[in-house]
Length: 316
Length: 255
Image 1 (cartoon, one colour):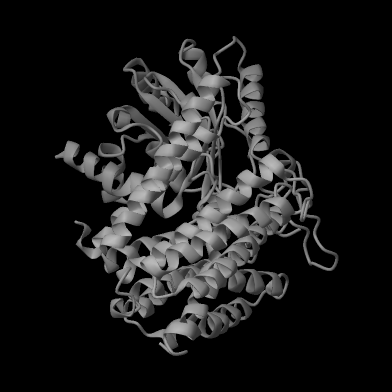
Image 2 (cartoon, rainbow over the protein chains, first blue to last red):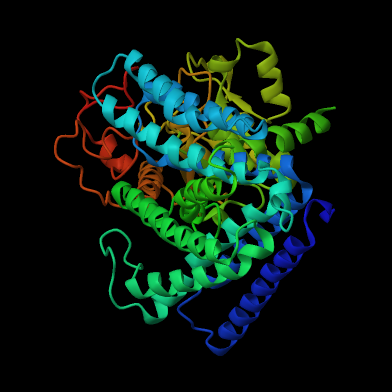
């Protein structure tokens, strides 16, 4: 079953499972020591992590097509959460269907390796179709709001997230150590790891809040500890599952950490604007899918762009 | 054959549509009855209300689920009528032109409860304006009076009227909220029972409302939550809004 994964990636997956085992053991002991603890959501949170890691590894192992189907499903669920949250009118229903229709097309460009179509599709055709369709609906009241929020949502949930898919279809020959799954694993692991470290460091030693009105849990201490850890880990892992050397891995880690933070705080701002706490209740302990992939939204295109510039000759 | 159709209906349609195509945020799903007889009472916005509620029950209870629907609305479509009666277990109610010769309009509902089934009842009687509670029809109080020991579970659904509003054919994938309340029981007075039931559902409508955190920036045409469809404004408040507001085809709700 694991033929699609190189030995290095298999060991990396085993490492992630080991981390989860350690975390589960830690939570178990913690709950025993303090039955009245204040972190009651840790158990469902970890259970969701197990589920996500299992799904992610299984699809990686099944190969390219399975990975793309999973990523398209993630885009669909994320867009659905977004469209369910934003204010819409009844006349916006056809527009929402058009937005959904972008998902299969976007992932078709991924699967066929058509980077030129992939990179232009949402910003160009999405903009054209959604804006014109919104205008054709003939209701000027609220036009800018719906055209703007739909295009933005499509960029975030479809265009940006689909870059994860393009990491999988890059020629495996360019990455002998990690194969086609190595880069995706590298990015997803680092972004999520950085997120968790920022959360834990922020909870334990956070003092100065970065944006209290947007996200009260984000602190400078958490961000710095998260960034340093991510950069070190990124440099260490780079030669192992990616075509990057240690120095390039260092930069990649910094980009992933910073873009991850930017994505996180962006989704927080959306939620604050709309007055909701979580984007849905899909993942117990975490909230919605958009809450979980927020750190990947901006990190995926940035990391891909960086990779393309230094390793795939600026064009794909 | 019916059993096979039921299996296919539940596993290939009801569950995938409810949990993948739409997606449910359920609040206190554990309060739903785990055995019959019981009456589930919900607000009604969309044809998918019944689908969503059916999906929330385990498969073993599927044969017990009996949605109550208006005969005049569905009787025209022969095949659909057959499917609803035999596969979905729908009980059809004569809604209009009741004559004494029709006998007891609630007889089938009563029989189902006596048999241990779980009724799904929409006391608004029609899908109406999404998420605005219309007046309740008194049939539910008559049923509760006849079956005083049967628990009546109030449910508030939000979002189904947005995914598939009345008059539309193509559903849009959108998340739906399901708020389940504590079971009520008959307490001896129809009027009081109706008021209790109505306020229980109105309270559930309030439950999910996070106060709209974002202040709408100046200059936007409509404040957040008003143009939008559910944010920040409770169903109760919406139901009390001036009657000049109409649900038209150009907007979810125009002020």
